Amino acid sequence: MSEQNDAADDVKRKFREALEKKNAQHNGAGESHLDGKGAVTEAHGAAGAKRQFRRKSG
Image 1 (cartoon, rainbow, N blue to C red):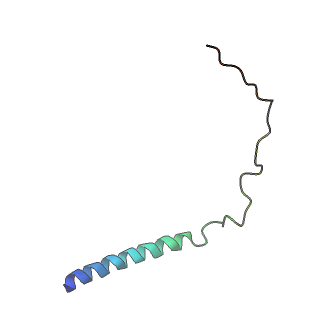
Image 2: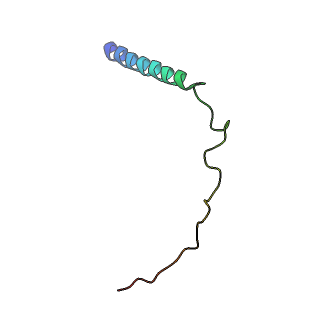
Image 3: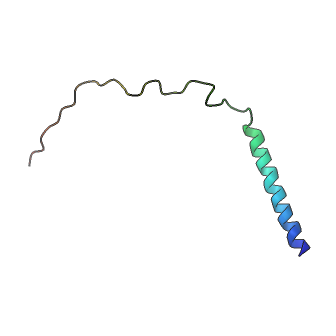
């Protein structure tokens, strides 16, 4: 029974180390989305011409 607990603790420890390593890579590595200006500047693009609706023949 203690071997199962040791194995479970070992797996938990490995996952915790991997998570800490992953979080360490992301901390301070990039800009926050709140810091910069977004890529989209306008809600809609300019319309080139008025749309034409044509009746379907057939």
